[in-house]
Length: 85
Image (cartoon, rainbow, N blue to C red):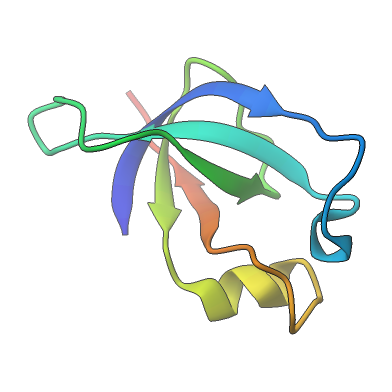
């Protein structure tokens, strides 16, 4: 798991069937000190996160695929919580 900052959302007119109905966020992973940690990633969100929020993300692909109910979905990242404060 890792902390990230939601920097936007993504939409697509054509996408893998495993993403249909899923809210897609663009999340910038962060280090403990708040510095950027690599490139932004695409994450599935089921908890109502939005731009400007700090979130906890997980790269557990199996859990992310279960969240979208698709065993063959290419999804890897999942928002699992919101950071308070």
